[in-house]
Amino acid sequence: MSSFSDNTSDWNFRIFEKRLIVVKTKNAEVQKIAVLDVLTNLMFAVEVPEPVLFQVLAVNREYLANLKVFTSKKSSNVDKKFTNFFEALDIDQGMDDFIKAFWAYPTKIRFELTDTEEP
Image (cartoon, rainbow, N blue to C red; front, side, top):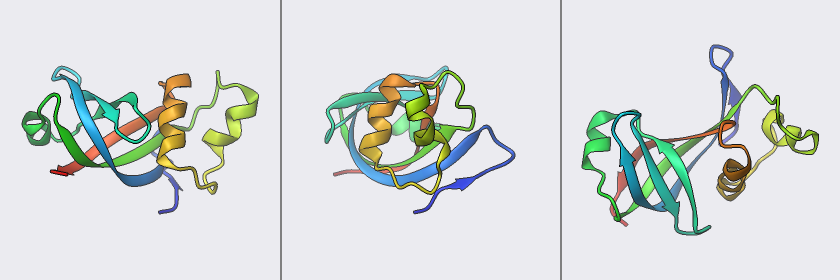
């Protein structure tokens, strides 16, 4: 799926992918979950915009999750050698790349859960 720029937002949609995750914690105040990606063995935060979906997620349970990835349109405070990663929308990066980049630039990458299914 190709990337596109949404001029009404501060975020660029990058990819949509299905991943096997384990929900580690939930925070109802901000509608976010912390997940462990099974393939990379890395944790990252995921927004859950749908309250009903947030309620049914169980901690320490595996899910096959459909995730949207967004990157910030504001690349300030990003090392010059990584600026292209955030600004070049026509470059195909994989989900693994975004998960790893989240550890270096957590405010520049957003993950959003759209739905889940049992693995």
